[in-house]
Length: 172
Image (cartoon, rainbow, N blue to C red):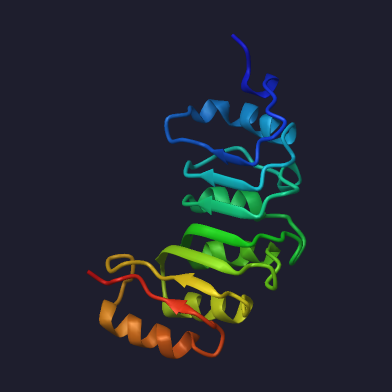
């Protein structure tokens, strides 16, 4: 049986790793990414036990990472502000995912879609670290620990100085 890393798609710009792939394939997927350095968009919904080195994705601009462990494994050990993502989506924002995000260049990150937030202090830290975000999506009710109406008012007041175009998801 051929291994995934043996296939080459010279024009590949987007890679979506589906849930159905076995976690045992992660090593082969990493090798596949190394052989496709032009990947600009990566969607990775799975928890991974294998570290995904950032240098395997030198053209990466858009990342969707709904697994905290994946995000941490991707960013850990990277130099501060060394990764120039334009957008980051499906982020489970918590204190443990915030510190590895220091590897992201705060001036290049423009779009951030949060899947969940663990606390107001984490959100406050995020706002101070990434002042140039122009597109922010906050999670729906249920992803906040506190009362959603209060969060909406607090988020608007707290983020207004940093965020030029705050878009709140409907809280229904």
